[in-house]
Length: 315
Image 1 (spheres, helix red, strand yellow):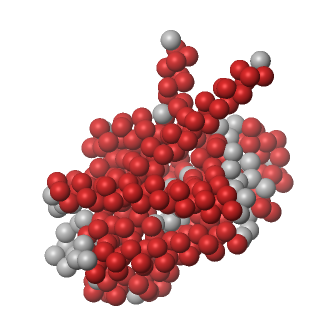
Image 2 (cartoon, helix red, strand yellow):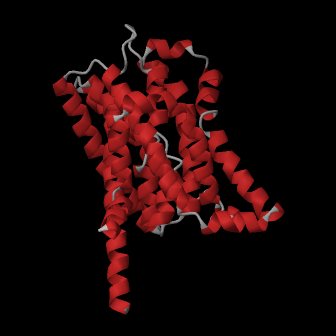
């Protein structure tokens, strides 16, 4: 019985974390800003397993950047032309939002190329940090009030320290304290449960943002459905394009798993309507967090099933 409970938690840890964070959002939202320490520690475990020489730009990354940029621009103007302005902004942000730093954890757990994924986390963050200050002022007059370089740095400073800090520390440990480095590398499985813990606070932020929006029931359902379609499409495109370049797992995570906490912050910064209300796009972005973790939970469950089948076959 205990084994089944542990197995259930391992298989569905991400969804359980979302459920806990959603139900207890009033409590967890007060501590959401502390997750940076969890993310730092989580990435340190992961980066100790990555060869630094593999962190480099690859052709597939240019393809992914093109999908994010042109996909966001194309869908925005398509839906805006149809008069679906809230869906236009939601779809744009769901595609343009950068890859989640923790996607490297899931990539490694699924057996993919975490180095390639980590490289793309940085590149996708650079993309939105330049695109948002340049493009969004054309969509909202209020966004133009923020100077370009200030807006650009505001986004980058939320991403770069979390990525660069654990990466540089992992390299330092490799040469200064190799036994400590090897210990982090052996216990990298801990990083997955740290990520699940981070999701509790991400879910709390998501619920808080959605509750602050003025979207009605019909609009909320439309935005949630749109984000579900886009989430599935991004994972599908990522896996297909990644397979062409030799790693479908990393590709799926690079395009599919988004840093929606940062995305929601960017939307609040640039896309707030003139009346000061919360952008309705946040509803779609918030529910994207649910869809991406449903997909990741299913992938992890399927991988465990395959591993168990292989063990039984060789027993």
